[in-house]
Amino acid sequence: MLRLMKRSWRYLTAALTGKFNEHADPKVQLEQAIAESQEQHRRLKEQAANVIANQKQTELRLNRTMEELEKVNRSARQAVLMAAEAEQAGDTAKLNDYTAAAESFANRLIVLEGEVETLKELHLQSSQAVDQAKAAVAQNGSALQKRLAERQRLMSQLDQAKMQEQMNTAMASLSETVGGDVPSLAEVQSKIEARYAKAKGMAELNSDSVESRMLEVEQAAMQGEARNRLSQIRAQLGLEAPEPGSAGEVGTGGGSSSS
Image (cartoon, rainbow, N blue to C red):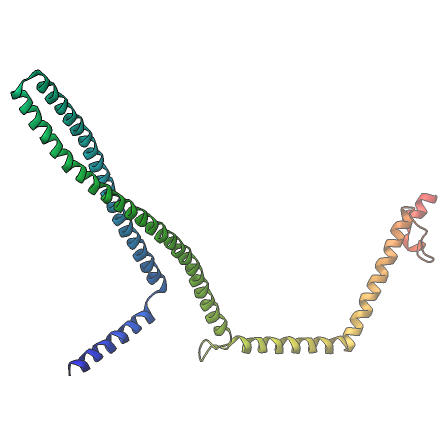
């Protein structure tokens, strides 16, 4: 029973996830993925900063311990010298005091030398950890830059896909009727072509009728008369000789000038 419930839960989760992915906006999902990558890079940088901080603290402790070691070493040497002088002077009390001080400094030297060795080892390990952390940050930063560039490419591709889908929808609607009472573009085109063909046919019939021939004769006569009139005007202006039989029509202007 328990196994069946687990399988049913996994099936339901997968089904809901599939439905969600099917209806989710790809642009939003892409931004979520990039935001998660940026947050991961931020956490990695924070961890690397902690590693570097630990290395710096170890280095500071090592430097302080080495300075103290040098100081205690000088003090131990000085105590030994002063104990030797007291021994030469025969001062037993000072000899005992300086000898005790020198022994204390020597014990402190042993402790500090152990601390220095430990800190050196820790500093070496922390330096290696710092190098690894920096390399991880650099590698993850490079991967993040690639994801950002890929996001830009995918965004552009997504916009192109949306425009193509809109274009496909518009092109599909051109070959479909808008509604039952509205003709399609192809039907309207057929009607216009039919009217145009009928009009052209009527024009051809009219051009072959007697009335059209009479109209052509009248237009030809009018054009001939216009040409004669232009010829007379040019003759009056001395631009050309008048045509035979047209001088009397030009008339009175020529006769008055000869008298």
